[in-house]
Image: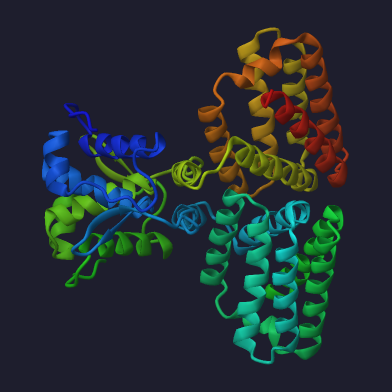
Length: 230
Length: 230
C-alpha cells in the first residue's frame, strides 16, 4: 500500500504519497486513512512528520479529522478554493471589483452552459424557487432564495470547477462587503426589478437559449454589482 | 504583535493569527516570519504545533521555507490555485473537458477585458510575440511563444484572480493531457491556421474591440480544444 520514505522534506513526501493514492483511486471520498501510528510504521518516518503532513492535508481540504474517529478523505470540496483565493486576494492587492468581475464571468458563462444542460426537473426546481422569491417578504429569506437560485444555475453547468470558483468568490464577497448585499433588497422597486431579472434568466434557460441566458445573467450581474458598489 | 493561545486545535489558531497579520498588512510579501523558537515563546504553544502550522502555511502557498534562512511570506502566488484545484479534479470526477471548458471561459473573458485595458506598450509586446511565432520553426519554441501570448493577454485583464485560475487550469491540462499539446503544432496547415487565429485576436485587442476579442478567442479555444481532444 505505502512505500517507506528515506529522504529529506519528509512531510511533503508523506503528503505526496497520500495524494498519489487519491489520484489512482486507492483512497476515495469518505475513506478512512490509516491511523497515525500505522502511518509511522508503514512509511518509516517520525510521528511529527506524519502529523505535519496530516495537518497540511487538512488545511488544503483533502482530509478532515474527526475527533476520536481518525482522519477521512473529505466528501465535500465545494469550498476548497476559498482559502487559497483568500490568500491571493490579500497579498496581490486584489479588490472587491476583481472578485465581482470573476463572479460575473463565472455566473454568466455558467448560465450559458446550464441552458444547454437543462432538464425538466431543473425547470420545475427553478420555477418553484422563482415563485417563492416573488412572494417572499422576508429580507433574509429573499437573500437566501436568491443565492440558491444562482447556485442551482452554477450547478447545472455540470462543471464542478466552475461551481467551486463561484463558491470561493461568493465567500470572498461576503467576507469583504458584508452587509452590503442586504442594501439591494431593501427598496421595493429594486426588489421588483431583481425578480424580473431572475424571471428573464429563467425563461432563457427554459428555452435553452444560451446567448440569451448569458446576456440576461450579465445584465443581472451588472445591476447587482452596481448596487453593491454604492 | 501576537496574542498567546490557550484553546484546542492549536495549530489552526497559529495559522489564523499569521493569516490575520497578513490581512491587516502587518506581514507583507517577502517578509520574514519570527523563528520557530520566537513563535513558541510569543504564542505560548508547543514547538510541534508551530511546526504543523508552518507546514500548513507552506502547503497552501502562503509562506516559503528557505533552508538556513527561515520562513518568508511568499512573493509569488500565481500557482496557488493549482494544488486545491488538482484535488477537486481528482475527487469530483472532473474531466479534462471540464478543465478546458474553464480555461476557455477564462481566456475568452480575459481577452474581452484586455481589449479595454490595452496600452501601446502591450500592443508592441504582442506584435513582437506574434512576429516571432510566425517565423518560428522550432516546435517547442512555438508552444512556448504561444503560451506566452496567452499569458500576456490574461495578464492584461488586470485581474490576478483570473490569471491564477488560468494558470491552475493550464497546469492541470499539462498534467492530464501531456504531450497532446504538441500534436496541434505538428501539421503545417494547422500551424498556419493557429498563427492566423492569433493575428485576429491581436487585431481585435489592438482595436479595443472587446466583443471581437471575445469571439476570436472563443473560436481559437474551440479549435485548440477540438484538436487537443483528437
